[in-house]
Image 1 (tube, helix red, strand yellow):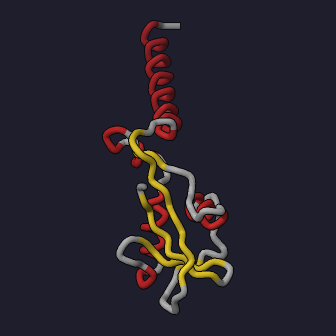
Image 2 (image 1 turned 180 degrees about the vertical axis):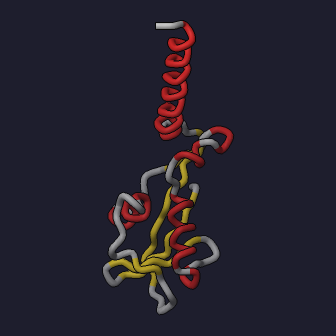
Image 3 (image 1 turned 180 degrees about the horizontal axis):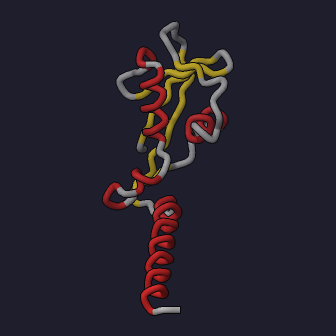
Length: 127
């Protein structure tokens, strides 16, 4: 194999490894106190986003919070320099997506959602 060809293959392999690391590594990076998506049952007739048919793959923090005993999702830690948020799914993404889908369901700190006939106020907190 020629030297130029071998160097090209090495360079391509390094780029592939770097891209794989960017995809996997950010989920392991985390610093500071975690953020949680919390849901609290409320009584209201205001507009709420219907989340009966959403997948826990699309909204893992929201579905996890609704299914939990304490109404709180798993923790999410931000990464250094804000890079983690570019590559991973966050609870902020879920609240923003629901707010964009149903703007009238937005509250000052979160969004109202409806699941199985119960209305919840979902918001991201940092205890």
